[in-house]
Length: 365
Image (cartoon, rainbow, N blue to C red):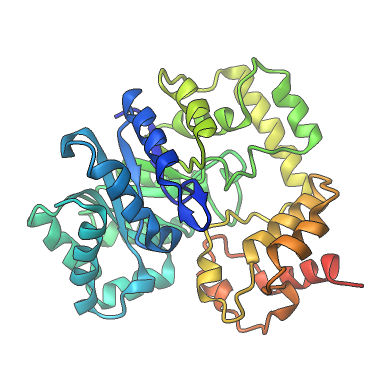
């Protein structure tokens, strides 16, 4: 496998639906250039990611031409009897008879307990024996000690998907680097998610951008993805490509992949230092928080606006916050302080306090 995977959480959209024509073009270009790894989950795009892959990939290409990963998401299961029906519905939605990789989704300290209690791991391992799963793994959002516990209790895990990018590598809350070390300790290949940190590393503040502009002309995303792909033990790096331009850019530097050289490595470390000093909210727009928010607050968009205002000096963020993202509701000030968002946030953000900062910035006067 080439090291670039097609992350299907951010497919091109048109009128609230997946743009199937554009997605087909992207799938075709991806495969024609020798890439074959596709990643989805039942909740991506409200279930539309799986069916889009059926329309654009699995119904159009022989099964051996692609590698398809799906996940068992906790939002859709509450007891042991829920696991197999959900899994079978995922096979049907994707139009396949088996998944190459099946991951226990978004594992952390609390969700791991839930999965154990409903025997989700055991059921998935049964599916592995039945040939409906070819490889069994987890996607992970917590700190290194939790990951070590999971890998110790379930040595059957074959692969681990972690968040890894140069901004989070030494971050004490995400612990990307430490989690990577744990995977190496247990000899588990790593699949990388969020290599561009939800797009944050594609658009940098002026001081950081100047550093990358002095290199040899690669895109901001290219340095971030190559940083992740060059780490020892990394099997695959996922990129959530939303249009053909992103696809073409990723293919251009990952078709014949080369790790960052010394000069490039020094540059991204300088960029990382600048970003840390700016104090950005490290939200990756995974949208888990919005799925549980009883008030429908647009938390990722609110944080993105605040980041743009504070860090990237984006003058029109107030307009976007009030007239685009919250025009029909979901303002930060509507938070009732229930804390459900904080309980599910992979980044362990203090969302309630941050929403007060958003409201103060954009909703006064």
